[in-house]
Image (tube, rainbow, N blue to C red; front, top):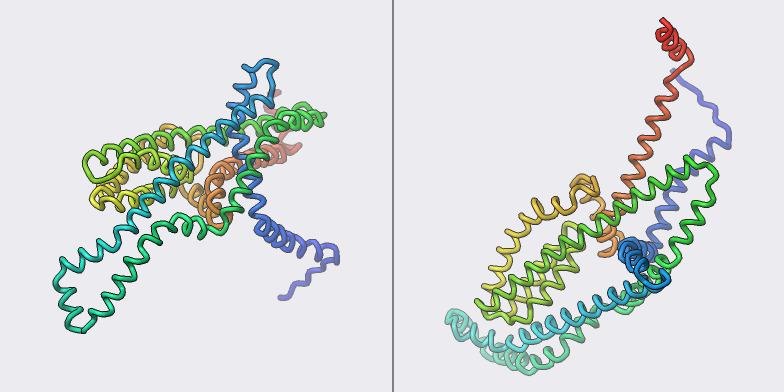
Length: 377
């Protein structure tokens, strides 16, 4: 049996314009992902600082919004400067120290392991080994001197990152200063009071999701960073580990722990590598201690502090973080969960609205008449 479907040209065009529009929108978002990450990061920072800015504003003479924002940004810039000062020099120093000890490590290994010497002698590789050792010794000091520059030089996007960071800070500053006024203008456009209150309620829920996540994540990161830094400081008394690695370790853990799910593990790997450059046993002990703490953090600390503010399952969190990291980079991974939480607020609101509309449509005139007749009886 064949069925013939008649469709006019307008319907046909609309049918194909929908998927085409989705593809074009997706391509546009992907092409503009760098700009979207900058704007999203600025918005995320503005929402995170809105509470402190409002608190400072209420206590300043004249209740200056600009003054409260400026003081908050001074603290943010000071934190970024302290992080760079505390973290970068010790990492470069420890790595350069390791490069300087490479020739002695190779000499010691060659001297201790007779099997290696026998193998070199058996195959008459003495000249090649001596040339390689001489070359390494000559270049070791140069490696150490240029290592920090090579590491920074290998980050070809460093200049772009600094520009993006500066742009995000400026955008956040302007959002905090002009945001309340723009929001008031937006609410003044409403003539329907119930709709205004309804939309304000939705926006307030989204704001609480973001602010709650920020406070919770900063608290979890602060606790973990304090414990990791204290752990490294204790290890410096037991193993051959410099005590000045404690503060950089805490700073690295705090910043990377802001990346959901993967950040703390990445931080532990970096700290473990720093410790391994001085004492491999200390690195092993640190990794074991981190694994124990991570179980406590994942099962006790984080759930207690976050207290289900996001109301997202582990599956949706993993999906959000994966998309954020692979499409928008580290910044996308940081802001992916609050964005997913806001989308969940909108989705729940849509489902609730659809349910109410469905219930209204099911109240047919006949059903209303039957209900009225029963009430009269």
